Length: 213
Length: 216
Ligand SMILES: Nc1ncnc2c1ncn2[C@@H]1O[C@H](COP(=O)(O)OP(=O)(O)OP(=O)(O)O)[C@@H](O)[C@H]1O
Ligand SMILES: [Mg+2]
Image 1 (cartoon, chains in turn blue, purple):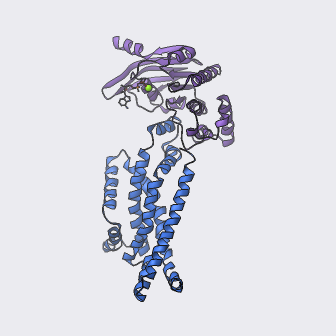
Image 2 (cartoon, each protein chain N blue to C red; image 1 turned 90 degrees about the vertical axis):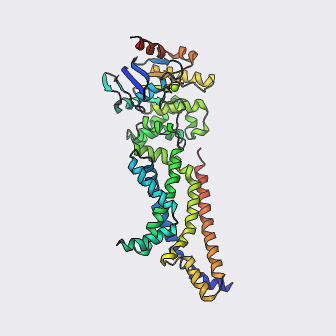
Image 3 (tube, helix red, strand yellow; image 1 turned 135 degrees about the vertical axis):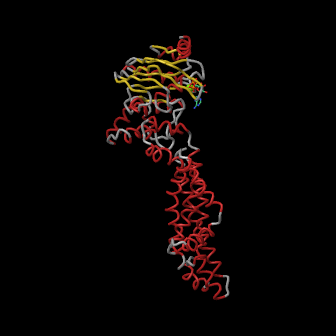
């Protein structure tokens, strides 16, 4: 028990980084994902072609590789990021691609009559999207979105590759210093707690969205 | 008064109607009847700007517009066949949405108008319900209220009684006749002959009009 007490502060010192990556990615990738989803529906084929290429790359290569490329690769051609900014950039563009696919499916699932009703009432395209379409899309995509959020919690552990100190890295350092598995055990429990919180939040929002059908 | 002049519409090479003309007098109910697939819904879509047309003019209250001019659809209220209510908004919110967003009316003023409409259409008790909680007839009335909230010159219905039982159909009749008394001009596409006979001042026979134009 006292061992756990010894390790806990060390491991929790990595929590800032883990949560920072998590929230920055959520906040950045949702609006970008929506914009990309709309671009996928654009009438300009060049734009559609471009965003489809972007999504293909983002979903077709490992996030770990993308992270290495953004931090080391772009550095070689003179585009330099701080470690955290590299992580933020790589995570946001990666997650935005997955979310864009989800949002696109959601928009497609909205009956044509909803767009028509909004148009006939005189709503502008923007008003129609934000007041009529998006609220319905959100309800449709919550489950798929939730899966991505849960993946993200675990993906934050990839930041070790460019030397950032998250909870897993803190645990690894402690484990190798003391030749003990207990730090890893604690790290696992911390992830489980985070996932439990995320799951509860998702359930609550699903319940709230169930006031209408 | 609304006059359609020489309206032509085709989907690709498929000519739906050509040089179609029609007149809806002030405060009258005009029924539009014709076989399935003839182009009745297409006519409504063209009028409300949901579909582009090849040619034609629309005159509303003495002002003439080329077809496609947004000023036309601004003056038309449309009641869709399957209502197309917004499922995430309550009855009240469905009705208030466009007056607030489009007409930029004050919220208080809109609330008052919404309450009047709810009362007029007998759906006051449903004000805070969501569309999924309504019967077909109630949905229909919300759709009518939503269209009326924009104070249109003309209100158009696409098959308002399809899928409604006798009682709800009677309610639609009553509402339409009450609106007529207020001087609202109404155009109604329908297959329901008994219903049409009860409400119509004039009937537009879509098939006959199209045949006439072809034989010219
Ligand atoms: N988006 C479209 N693209 C191509 N053709 C279409 C389109 N919409 C309708 N049509 C065709 O136009 C014709 C008229 O259709 P419309 O829906 O206006 O008929 P309608 O008179 O309303 O029939 P109903 O009484 O069954 O509702 C049909 O032949 C239909 O196949
Ligand atoms: Mg039709």
